[in-house]
Structures are given as C-alpha cells and as structure tokens.
Length: 252
Ligand code: SAH
Image (cartoon, rainbow, N blue to C red; front, side, top):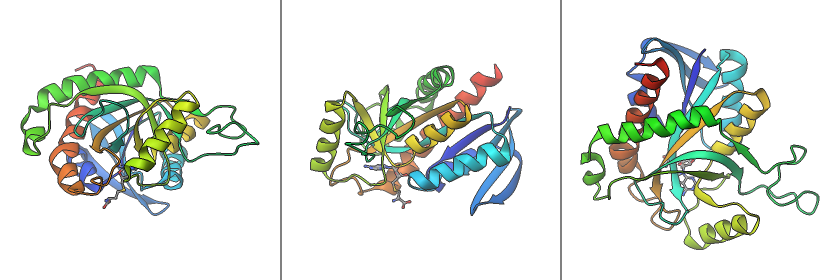
C-alpha cells in the first residue's frame, strides 16, 4: 500500500527524504522519485513541479508507474480566507481551479465533462491529516513561528483554489475570492497545483489529502522572504505533520 508524498519545493522535501530507510532514486518523465520505507511503510517522495499541468503529470506517473494507493501533498500557499494568516496551516477539504472558465458553454469553474467544479479530498485520509497537523504542530514547539515574529499557527479545514498564477496583488486576490464566492465557493488559500492532483486522483480513484502552510497573503509582500519562510517554518511544519501522519497510519 504505497503512499506518495508530493512536495512543491526542494527545501520541503529535504527533511522528509532524510527519514527514508534504504532510499532508491528512480527517474521518470524528467522527475526524480525517491522510493523507500518510513516507519515500515512503503513511500515514494517526489516534487510536483510548479503549475497544474506539471503536477498532473507527476501524479499520473505516481499512479501508473509506482502503483501508489494514496497521495499526500505538502506545500505552501497564499492565504485568501478571512482569518487565514501567514504561518497558519490549511488542510484541504476540496479543490477548485480558480482560472477555469468555459462559460457560457459550462457554468463558471465547472470542469467540462465532469459536471463538477470541485474535487473533494478523501475524508478518511484528510481526517488523519488534520489530526496529524494538530499533534505535529503541538510537538514542534513555538520557536519556528517566533523566529519570524509570527503568531502561533491555527489549523483550518476548507476549500483551496489552484491556478497557473502566482497571486501577489491584493486586487487580484480579492476579485478572485469575490468571483468564487459569487459562484458559492469560499476559498481559504490559493496555490498552483492541488486541483490538478485532486482531479487525477479522482480519475484513478486514489485517495488524496493535502496541507498547505500559508506563506503569504497573496499580496505585494508575497514574494518577500519566501525562502526564509520555507526554510524556517514551512519545512519543519511539513516534517512534523508528515511524521505524525505516518505514525498514525502505522498505529504507533
Ligand atoms: N519562489 C519559488 C517559486 C515557487 S512558485 C522558487 O523559487 O521555487 C510558488 C509556489 O508556492 C507554488 O508551488 C504555489 O503552489 C505556492 N504559492 C505560495 N503562495 C502563492 C500565491 N500567493 N499564489 C500562488 N501560488 C502560491
């Protein structure tokens, strides 16, 4: 029952890779897959690459070539929901593509021929991830967020919007949010891969769960100190939460 753990950024993947016993490197489709065991569980670690198409390719290879039976994604995202601040963690309930629009042929945001705009994450896997996030962040201590003068992290559960755009303008972010709300969708965070991974997992019937640490508020500050944030906060959080998730799954 191989578990895939996809990360968006190399810095986030590094800490996870150190946990693997007997890591084997396999190259496919221009990507590096690391196969190994983590507390006795078979896992494959891979970088999604950035954007929806790249993430869809990575997910397809995971299912077709590595026969993974569940997929976990960790990454960073821009916070767009009210009260979703830098340093918080969002566990995804579902994903939507904020830049998909085939109106008037199909309702705005609907994925043509799927009859739906959102793809749900697996409820069981997501409940485990939520529990792992609560336990993991409680264990990790407060020096990580304090190092960047952030408040203690809150954990949210909700909709994440994906698109092929790094959102770094408050006007763009609030228009996106208002348009999604007008169609009945309330996004908490924005990023560039999750909806693609969710759709591919839906196609194959593979359970999927995702967490994103909020790196920015999708405004003009969004590009600042991105690497400091990833190294000092998002990477230790990803390691703490994934370690806890693996523990929960192996019943230890
Ligand atoms: N500066 C990075 C580039 C990463 S692009 C580098 O040097 O590698 C941004 C990544 O973070 C994407 O994977 C995306 O999913 C996520 N992300 C974080 N904040 C975002 C935002 N405001 N809008 C869109 N994607 C965001």
